Image (cartoon, rainbow, N blue to C red; front, side, top):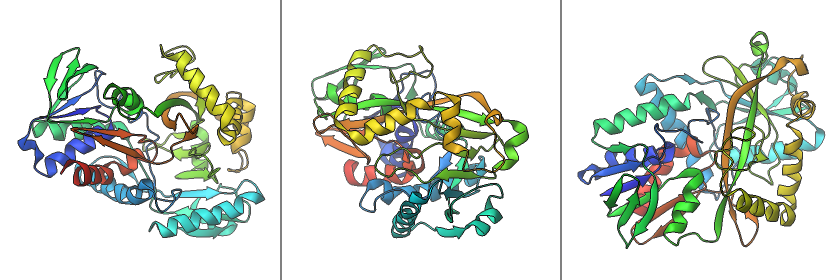
Length: 393
């Protein structure tokens, strides 16, 4: 029996690949602690299919982002799911962004992504209201999907192939080398694949794996453009990011339903499900705060980013991040929305550094998928094939 822990995009994609490669000769079971698939990071994803721009060429993210993008778009077309092939522009808000823009161009070109440097006139032909300083970067392969629609479709596909998805099932403990104790009974396994997202470190630690790693949650808050101002954005308008950290900055995305979301922030959160001020505060809050504190003290890049992000709780500072990206934008054009997500960022406890790439650890008959943050959703199908080919076969 193959057991997969977690019915987010990575767990479902690995199950899909196992079925494709004929592993459903073995029984495949997916545990999901919530009552539905994709209740957390996957279902709350921005919906942007990234196109291999930001990632250093030697990384797994660079290897699988663009491939995953193409595979996900094919899947949407095959299944008749929503797909907005709108592209993305990355704009400069200040002159010192220009060298970083050209570095992104180099990275994208090396990764095989189709990108183009635009001047201000060319930018207007793609995004009429976007603003930049001198140059912008155009990524035609960036697209937008509906994450929950894809997750539900995958669930239906898997169930047709007799894959069991056991919702409301939590991993409580392990027994010996091949037994999982859950609230719904004890299960034997030949292979256990940990795809538990923001809880992947906790599951790994139960197997005495990855003890040097811990997940620190960051909260991503969004606002929305008023309906009458949605014409200001045709697709995606992103800022040049700080490439020293993995956050891409507050940006504009037109969803498949026509709403324009502005965000996310990346503020330290008090729990792995801390979606509102008090809701979801983790019982590990003191451990989380302790880990966050060490990270802020010993990692100056994270400290600088966190202090900047916290300010964005205030409308004035949030607006300051985006006011130079779109013409005619006023602070009162932004309205509150209920879209919020948690980014489960893996850190190395010893070095106090953020882990910037996907991480896979195999130990005996267990496999632990850690740090599948952005572009995890985009990369999922290509990444799943790599996992099955390299670690399962």
